[in-house]
Length: 398
Image (cartoon, rainbow, N blue to C red):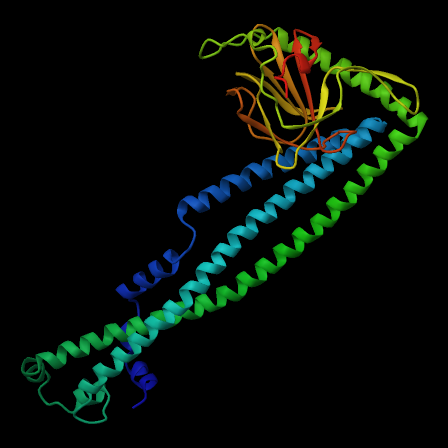
């Protein structure tokens, strides 16, 4: 008698029941290299944060598009769109990572389910050899030929036990088979999901490349066209005045620190650098070699080294500003007490939030090129009240 026929004979006993084996199989499926509840929670947390950031950037882009289309506004809009696309790519990357881990889990579970299925099949065959040693009859037909069923059960306790055991292992076998089919089906679906995510991420990267080209073309125009260059200088002056207004507002706020801070002025000449790299724009008066124009820089621009993309705090203090600011991109301002401030501009991502207290050397942001005319770089200032100070007189000598 074929094993399929024997299983069909016992299907009636399974209706409305779930065997213990089903639970075992589910545990096997979800534990074999799969995502833990903590992993899933972390993915959800990261995706939720990115979703909120994307929403905020889109809102900011809409506001920028309603404003006058100046040179720096155009540069800011490009920066915002680049930032938006990067966040969207990050979403796809997280989803792709999660899908790949789930795919690995499914692939790992399938051979285990097949192995379990084979063992259950062998167990059924062994049991049926015992049950049907009296002849090639199904259990049901064999019972019909017995005149005294109670007598048969009492006289053949082992046979009764085997019949019950047969019901359980067949139920387990069918449940395992169902789990295997589900896993194989999910495997195909997960492969399609991964393919779609890869295509979406690829398309977003092409969009990012297009925005990068726009950004570079505009910067070339600013640097090579005298009229555009002069207009940009006027706009930069306006942005610097707006930053001055912001600093004045911050001066009116009093901060309370959890511990006594070493005054910043006691560290003059010994402060750590916010990032390792080369100074590409110096502090103070700067003369343009081609157009013979003079500008005043309130800070310095630092091009990072190859492995220096993390911005660090130069001194303990309270983060009083973390937001987009026209002309400075993503800007961080830290209040170090006694009216001393440090400013970090053109960041790509914040690693801290407004209101946090930071320590010396604590990572606070990632370097970017948001609203920068110098490419990937950090714009850095130190101020006493509203007065810009030369950072090179405060940072340790290199």
